[in-house]
Amino acid sequence: MIRKSLAIAALAGLVAVPATAHAEPVSPAESAARAYIAALLSHNASNVPLAPDAHRVENGVPTGFSGADLKFQLEYGPQYRIITAIYDLTVTTNGDHVDTHYRLDTGLFGVKLKTAEVTESFEVPGGLIKEINATFK
Figure 1 (cartoon, helix red, strand yellow):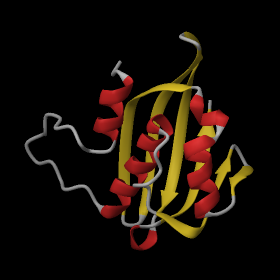
Figure 2 (cartoon, one colour):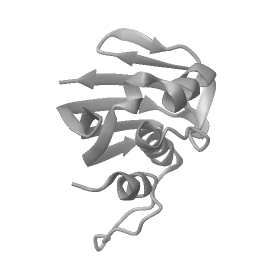
Figure 3 (tube, one colour):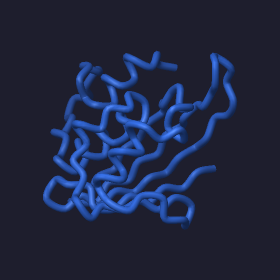
Figure 4 (tube, one colour):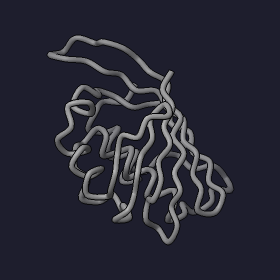
């Protein structure tokens, strides 16, 4: 498992990780999705490219209603403050569509609460996240 500070940098693409022989460049859509996931840990949404009319649905329930709302939640929402680690991230990109799968740990006051498996799909037309659909297990 990666420590929080290193995990944030790696998710945002700031830390070099070993490349495969034919690694493809990261698309703007993938960069946007990675920035969003990194902000779940860092609580700094300044680098998350969200469309003004962006929205988020979690397990079928609308949870984010605009780009400004999503940024506010990432920075101040208590639901994100308990996230202590994100790992085992996989990313698949097809044009403006990005699918991610990862595990996240939650905790309070140094006590681990739960590990959840998360699948998130992003629609990122023009490099701005417009839609996020998340499923937690």
